[in-house]
Length: 175
Image 1 (cartoon, rainbow, N blue to C red):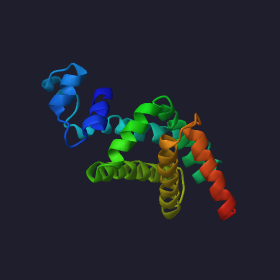
Image 2 (cartoon, rainbow, N blue to C red):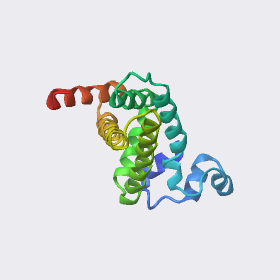
Image 3 (cartoon, rainbow, N blue to C red):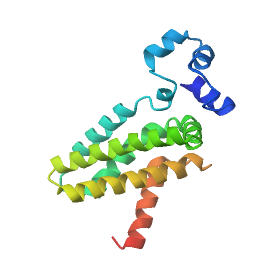
Image 4 (tube, rainbow, N blue to C red):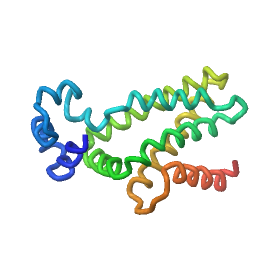
């Protein structure tokens, strides 16, 4: 994955082939395709596992916690994965942001996570409309925090960036 990100950054996504990635990684093209269906999948590797991880974290939240707190808490905990790979995430976000097709795919993946969170909230007894809005608000917080965190030069954790955004919302929304 590192080889692909480096090539995408250096040559551009559209100009980089699966063959280029395999060669850069010291693999055969055949081996590359055992792991990834196409070069786009390199950027979205682990998305399904992330969705399941967030679902598990949300299921594990105490039942007396407000739905938005449970969602933000789950997303903050999941965000630790990104903290460990900040440089990679920053490069990944740059590649995705520069390509409308990749950006659309990213938004679809995030929409899937949001739908999963809403379903999980419903299973926890939250009314459907409230669950859907809460999951969408949580995902919006995550997207904005991720963008800000990935481009910031500081050493702040993604969870701190998310928590700061939630605190700003509380101040302005008077929650």
